[in-house]
Length: 175
Ligand SMILES: [Zn+2]
Ligand SMILES: [Zn+2]
Image 1 (spheres, rainbow, N blue to C red):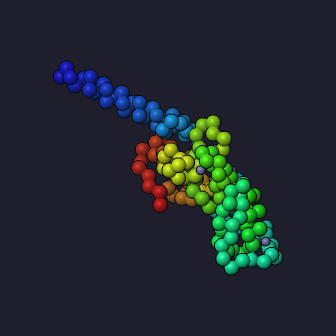
Image 2: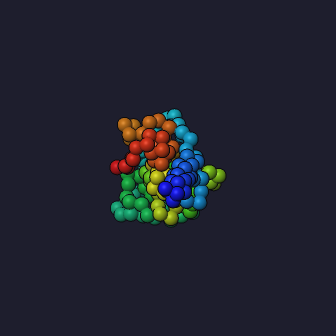
Image 3: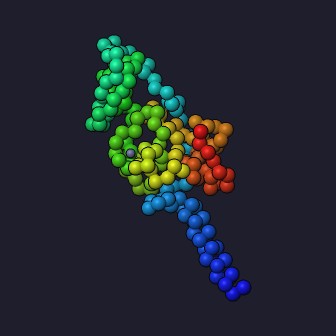
């Protein structure tokens, strides 16, 4: 009996600390906001829209190399020429808070930590501290939120998967 009380206390403390970490959004070395992040007005732009590019230029048959924020990126042949793709990507991409490399439209993104230089990261092992920080897909110059991607699963304003799990108490899988 004498031994049980300290054990309960210890495990109780560990549980409380874990809950506290989750509540404050501390993951790994960094803190993350669990505040709601409302959907931005206007279309999410989850698909590339080249309608602003009445490209009359010559198009190569195969892939080509374009430069986005000074980084060379290979792109497939598309309905517009590499010059127009380059302009499009430089206009609508953003930078990763971790590696500072471009996040292109269509890429899944993670929420960046409090005080980060940019609001999102790549969803790679190198750039994010947890898969639970997944917060949507980079669209055409703005985030396509979890709610916009899966309205049945995530209520409006859901900032990331961890925050959703904490608020609902339900395990959540991402398709
Ligand atoms: Zn063009
Ligand atoms: Zn990155």
